[in-house]
Length: 217
Image 1 (cartoon, rainbow, N blue to C red):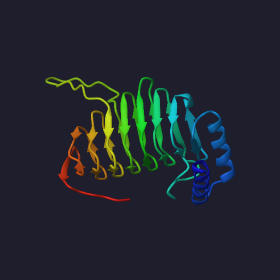
Image 2: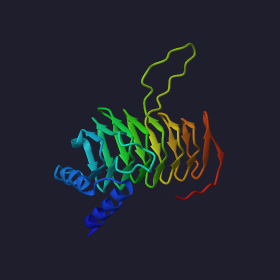
Image 3: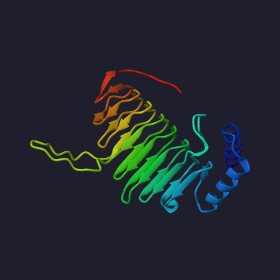
Image 4: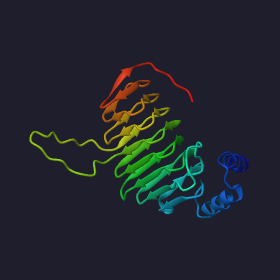
């Protein structure tokens, strides 16, 4: 019954997105035959399927929120490990890269369009995640910069707790820990440990500007 319910939800999502349900269903059945509970929209590219483990339904490039064009592509490229433990949605235009040796965990929630994730070490995104459009989540600096008096940092990996809302165009850098229930204001540059739950975090660099906040979606 649960699987039939998921198929009905797929039909409804296809109607909202104005795409072919039959084509989406065929793509889903192909992925299911290969052992992956994945539904995709047109223009979606998935590489490294054998490295993806999905407990619930992973929707990739199917939802568009009405702000994407037909030519916008969604790319999921997994050389390391991607685990999905709950229902999770990657909107159209998202690009996710998991490097060899990297581990990315999605629990449940969604990531809106045109957000990029680069995982070389470890990224954990908790339950009921809401990540808005145009965000960058990067657990590596990519380049080394040297200067006199530099203090070396061993920070790596990213942890985003449960029921966290990340506003549009935010950047989450390596070594970041965000506690449960937090809100990241739009356009924030976030790095470091934010261990107080239900905080409003904002700025460049981001700091806690309010505590005891709550939010709904």
